[in-house]
Length: 277
Image 1 (cartoon, one colour):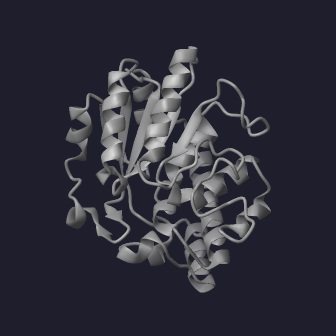
Image 2: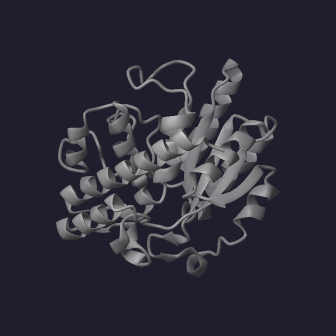
């Protein structure tokens, strides 16, 4: 469990990153607000508390790696990287515009701090397993952290990775499923029901935990428990709310990618600054 000072720091940082993500997308006028907002808490935990990284040396040998396989959540990843100092914050206002270094989906060839290009769903997961295997072969003590989506988990490639990673005993691979129960064009229960996602991962011999993905203490407890499991990879299934922190997007199917007006952004930011989520 996090100490009180660290917990309050991370809560404040999560609020800042949510506000920055909203401003980033509002400046463009539209974007992937739903899935970007639902992973902010785990991003903040990893980047501000857990991972061994150096923004002044993004390619540092032996660093922990992070792969956001659901690459459309890039805006919150970018907001986090900018705040950590990987690149100037004014880049955020160029999101998905001509000549930008911040495309709609994460791109390692354009954005400092991005460890792998993602967005073609499922491929980031395979890459993360490969990175973790490389760390293991090199004898590094580092970890690879991976985020996948629940809709993305309907891709066969996810399960090919799952069997590979468990066969290779990748105890240094810690993955998270952003289980917000929505995908591009509907609710997961209506497309392909993912309610038994826990047992699916258990069936592939992963260490599995399920938590509230907006509870920083729960995230910390789960990650620390996962790091103690060295003979197989870990999956932390996070129950989240899509668009968490951007109220106009909560509970609607179109929140995968939607218009974000200045007025709605202002209202959502005022709610966050007032302590609401």
